[in-house]
Image (cartoon, rainbow, N blue to C red; front, top):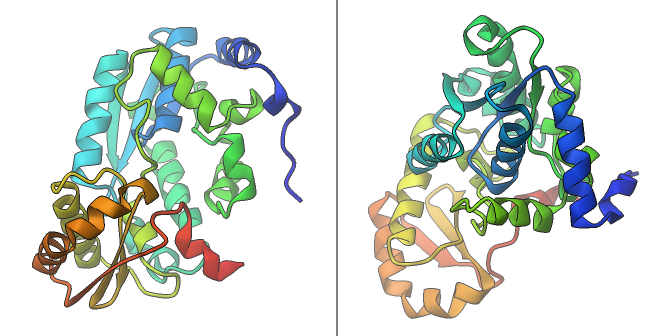
Length: 277
């Protein structure tokens, strides 16, 4: 049973006040920072509440698109916080590579383990590790939440009742460029559960998605089905995508796929989780 905090029903102003009060009580914060709108909102709030007692930490692995990594650096600089990029080795873990339904657990566990191992280089020992989970995540398949619990990683946005509209509003009020950024998960999320993951596969997916985005489409997922690439775009971009179907097909085939399909249902978050229900 999913328990949604009562704070989710509060007004936006009350949520902001609760978040600032919560963060101000921390000795310092280590923010797990992916560059998505949720972790960006948390990083901005930590900076406002804690000043220089905050550091952003980003995991760098083959599952992180290079463009996304560059964006984390630019955002951290814009917010004005120190940014530490930590190489992570989740692909060395058999649990991650075999890509069962708990893959995200091993990813988050690798990040939090790496932060703990590098703690002396990252931040003072009493600083608290926080991540950008929001109330919208509570009803979805999110094995990473189990890893966060094991490492006592806190979720201040959940505690203050923040949903997706709230984090976007916070980023928009701060003038951050990714306030309306489409959802962006790691590259491994494009691979159906049960299909083993390796670095060349992730590179292929990244190349294909970059090529499709270069055609002017914003919300793009290339779902990897061996030699077949199933391309999802936002529902409101489907008309544009079908008009560009030949260009999309050529671009994705250039990344190494034999066949290319456009998903008529469009992009939906957690599409590959449907097989788990």
